[in-house]
Image 1 (cartoon, rainbow, N blue to C red):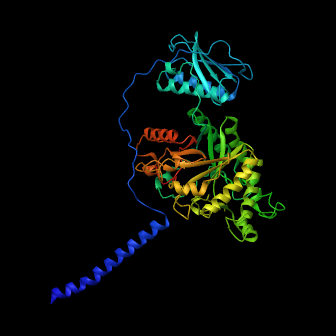
Image 2: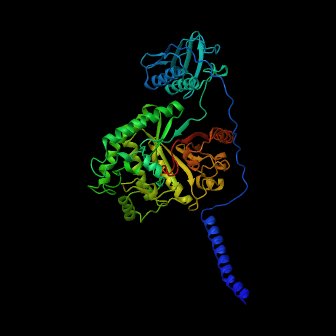
Image 3: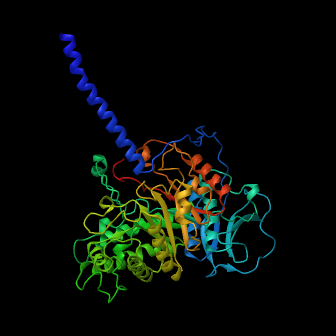
Length: 527
């Protein structure tokens, strides 16, 4: 009798377990369906983990002088060459400048070639030669006792000097025989970096806690004030110094563009209606936006002065409470298929390009948004609202019309997290074609992560980067959020190189990269 009772008591338990399993399966199926999740066999690129062989450092050239055009970007690069030689134990050469513009319109003599034995060279001479080749082209050679550098423009001349500095500093042969006298033109014309650690205060306690899961990446946060004058001048100066350091370092590494978070906080919507339709007279958003432009415009303009393109980054829809209220009155809400809504954002974008003319374009993401991305202390936020192919196309058409008229560009990120009909835009070539086919606008650049998903090492390469008629750039993450933010050592160089080579071989529209040196994930949730 006791055994029968025990068996009977088990039936309800077994039934409950079965019901829970069925409910779990149903929830899993629903989530998979809602987020367009699927699974299939995939070819994951193998990573070479073999240690590089030891090598003997090549002798550094015994340069006593570096003679360059009197141009700030070139003289800065020359100083880096001198520093590299000093770091290798050579006496630091004198950097001298010549003629104000440093330009020559015709070559003097044969192209610099000769041998690559640099033991007898005593001087490095650099110049700009307008007729040399395309943008950023350069060549390096030996002529007598001089190591010669010629660039097609300032950027090319500086790039050659940075290349020499890098090889000298790392102990490589300064001028390999295969490169002597050879014209070098970069295959990737757009090489973007993020804003690094600019504006991110080194707060050991906040990092040690590991519980800050904010996804906000603004660089201006430490300078914000809750009332007039709206920005802290000392904090702006500190952020400005960090930004200049980051730009100088990035240029030396070969980058020619920087992506800085921001859009709505610099806009007053003065071009909408009578100028007070969105923000009524006396609204603090107007004075704060003007203060932001006045304070940070000069900070970000430094990048342009150093030949670095500047793109601002925003989620769409970017909103503020007064902007939402205006759209509710005039459009009926956040109707992202309505051209009237996008006309408001067009007016804001046109204003931005006028108040900050050094900005080269706007990078837009529609795949994520919400309060977790907002800066503490202000009411700008974003809505995950652009989730259909028609709304994406309406947005791009409006933004491209405004950018094209100003000679600017729109970079559209395909990153999506499964929400809405465009939820698999990032990973599905069919969805990519459905959403973006027909957009042949020369001002459109499409940016995509190199992995078929997020930045996990175990994923295959992104097949949407293998085709398409648009200008494309490839996204990489250096400080991997899924590897303890870089705390776990993992040399990603071979993997990134393989990915880029495959994309370049398959798709001639790939023209650049965007490398995240710090961005991605909750920035203070790791070491």
